[in-house]
Image (tube, rainbow, N blue to C red; front, side):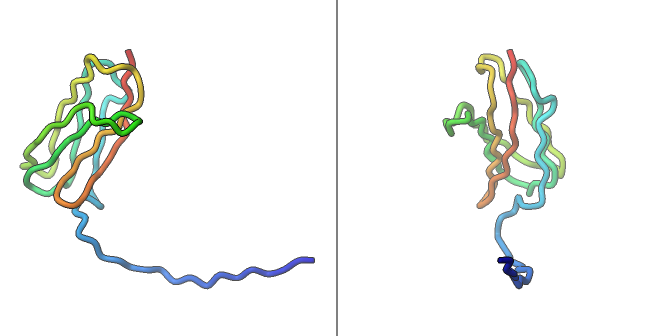
Length: 105
């Protein structure tokens, strides 16, 4: 027969120290051949690590950058990278923000 399944739920509000939860991260153009730009929006001022990671989790490139403005641009050199899908991780304090990028040759 038919039965009724009821779930009562209430929203949960949490607080976190992750400073990059409301920031923007964009790779453009994407896909790209040799060079693309990483746009950081509303990251905290200070040091950040930019990592290019392959789909297996291997770090292909790692760069330390200084965030000075609310909108920063960082050029990514993809020359020499095989075609495929990669991830750009921006690590700052206790938080990480990621975006996909695709290299086409």
